[in-house]
Amino acid sequence: MSWSTKRLAKSLWVFHLSASPCNNCDIEILDLLTPHYDVERFGIKLVGSIRHADIILLSGVINKKVAPMVKRLYEQAPKPIFVVGVGACPTSGCCFKDSYNITPCREDIIPIDVYIPGCPPKPEAMIEAFAKLMGVLRG
Ligand code: SF4
Image (cartoon, rainbow, N blue to C red; front, side):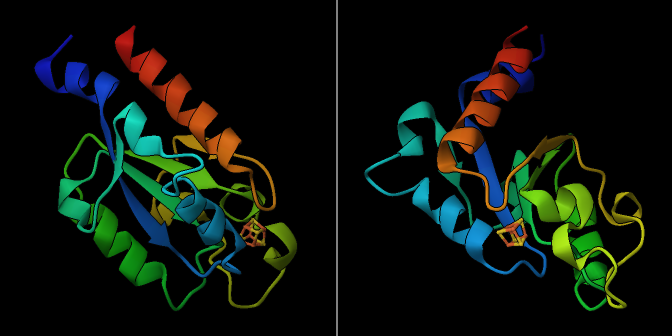
């Protein structure tokens, strides 16, 4: 196991990438930082720059307006980076999937490694996804 993988197994730095969601998922993501859930006690920290991130938390369906920005941010991220799709929007397109403004193939814009279902998913589901990811990294 490399040094960087060992570090990831103990501490994940997360960048929240909001790509045209309805904002409910974003509110649930912010809930993770409140004293009630306090994910920093698990070593999970929200960062303000994509260049510091180990994980991208992606919310929303990625419409045509934001698609170039999402692609560019992903290109700027240090690799390897894990992309976690939060909610039904990145998973299936949710109720927006037949909209004229949605990018037909999200995987062409940003490859998604882990999906967390729900509309919106509960913070507990996101914590479980982080725990599983850290478990996989520990081997
Ligand atoms: S998954 Fe549901 S709650 Fe989350 S951004 Fe999409 S529509 Fe909103």
